[in-house]
Length: 64
Figure (cartoon, rainbow, N blue to C red):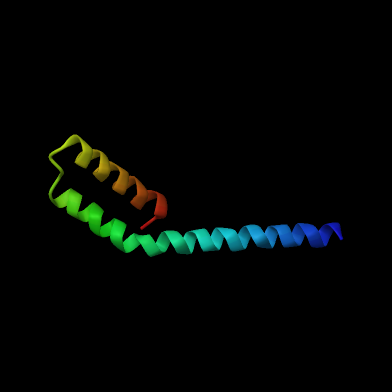
């Protein structure tokens, strides 16, 4: 019973990880487009620069 429970827990973790990765990949098109736009024409305001940094970080985190 313990082995079955551990196997089920492991499978649940793998399934959750895969679902999270698929969700991240759905955002990659938008994030990549925004990151490219900010690199081609850097923002002029502090808020815009922070947004550009955050988008670039998301792109790295999501491995887009």
